[in-house]
Length: 297
Image 1 (cartoon, rainbow, N blue to C red):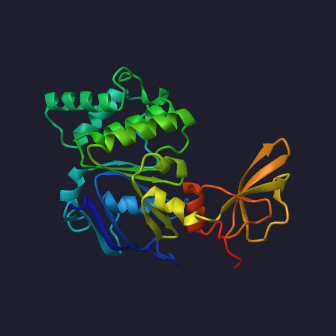
Image 2 (image 1 turned 90 degrees about the vertical axis):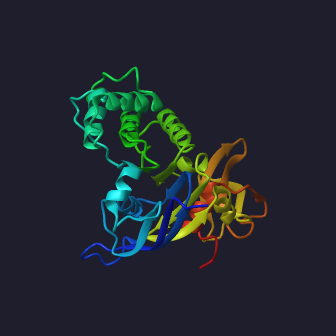
Image 3 (image 1 turned 45 degrees about the vertical axis):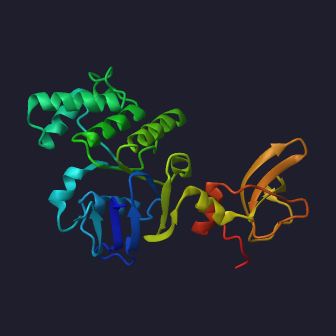
């Protein structure tokens, strides 16, 4: 199988920065939805900007469909659609006018072809009926759908989206995730986020990045298994653990008739009444990130 994207020792160090933003990242991506998970400042946006040909790496290389991103940007750009973290456009324009303008910037110069392309992307993101709304009147979810629509102009083979659900309410977030999953049937979708739930249900593969380093790559189930045998439920008082080891990590609590039950990450039962719990993707992520070490160091 031909890999859509190949990263080989990809590195980026900004001038006067003490640490690299990316430190020798090796990844291979194929068609479908791929999640890049990590906290704010992990290097996710730097990685996406390199893939989008907006930044030139200081080490290693990124290859998209056989083309070196840094050496052949003019061959790579027609293959890409990009939704940056802060998508902004002219607020007084309508959805239709915005897409028409961006289509012209993408060299879709024939008027009839441009109209057909606008109809296609409006239908894909379910904005056909709202086409005459001004950008300033759009909800957060509608604005993000417009951002995806402009990225889809020209039928790119790769769609790159950076923190697309930040600031959306739960219903809009679910709608947007489902839209991206549908789009991934026909192309590669690279989704960068710090929200575990954004990748849990929709991404077949993911990577975890922190401080510019690749900590994990694989399927979501494999990430959850990183916490296998380390997740427990036990009684806690007022949200604080009862006689738990100092290195045990309470990740959640819930009320019951007899007090509060805490979900705890620990390499062994933290209390005599502890019962094992099935690890979640969030549990595995916390273990991989070191937020809940699960050891006594």
